[in-house]
Image 1 (spheres, rainbow over the protein chains, first blue to last red):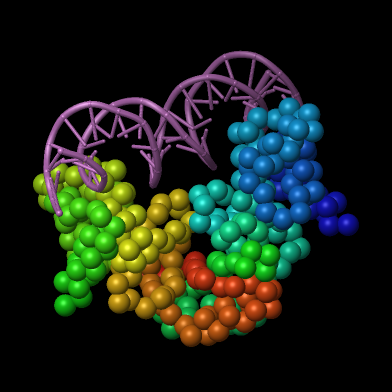
Image 2 (tube, each protein chain N blue to C red; image 1 turned 45 degrees about the vertical axis):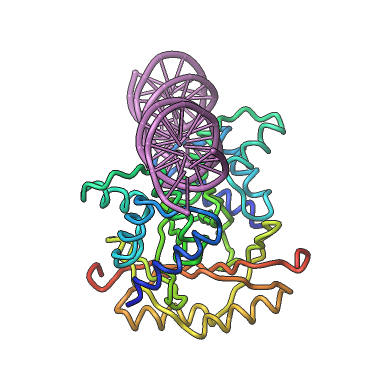
Length: 143
Length: 143
DNA sequence: TTGCTTGCAAAGCATTTGCAGATGA
DNA sequence: TCATCTGCAAATGCTTTGCAAGCAA
């Protein structure tokens, strides 16, 4: 399944850059892949500690950045000042609905948004690389 | 012009909440209204100090928050961890193109985006309040 | 051996807050 | 008068960095 090839892609990147395979990176990668959706460095760190893994929080931050650099993870920032990461390996681009009350996240994707991106960018002589869209409101539980 | 009524709206709000009119708030409001587009608390603070105004940075932060509360300003956050504010008084909602190289910002608005917001939200039983869209890429100068 | 890694503690940064003195209404 | 304001310094909270010891290759 995907977890295996994501792991391979990571170590390929690691090897190519002359970096090393370590138990900490292994543990963090495993935990990250197990995670359902978005997670912050702190959440990952706490989860690892709870499982008895001995990793430092700096290593979690560093490894998450490494994952983003090799294209396995994407940084997402909502309006709360916390950087979260989500899987990117074989995942399609998507945007988010953010509940203002309970903080829950729903992913969505819309081809129309991609079209708008191209169109708006063209109108302004802009070369689009990526976009980000968030809709803030109330989820169906909180309404 | 708009500056006068924005000022009136601000002091109306200030009076209604039992707050006071002070030289610092006056100076910060004036500088903010003079600002072309987005500005951070630090930029505003520096500009005021350069002009010889004696205001503390906490007051700038506090006043900017006040402006946002009374609907004159809107907080915007891009991916650099700095909170910026932009005029909201008699300005239409818009989204942003952000240049990854020089950091320049272009505003745009698209009725299609508003339509997507409504549609996507409806599909997920979500009640939309506001949205945020940013397209990151290269501006025509930096391409 | 060699230089990448790690964990800790300290540093960084933007922002917020506590507080005593100042001040607008 | 008196509650709101202000500026300062200290505190926050997330994240990064310096460094000496540890470890993969």
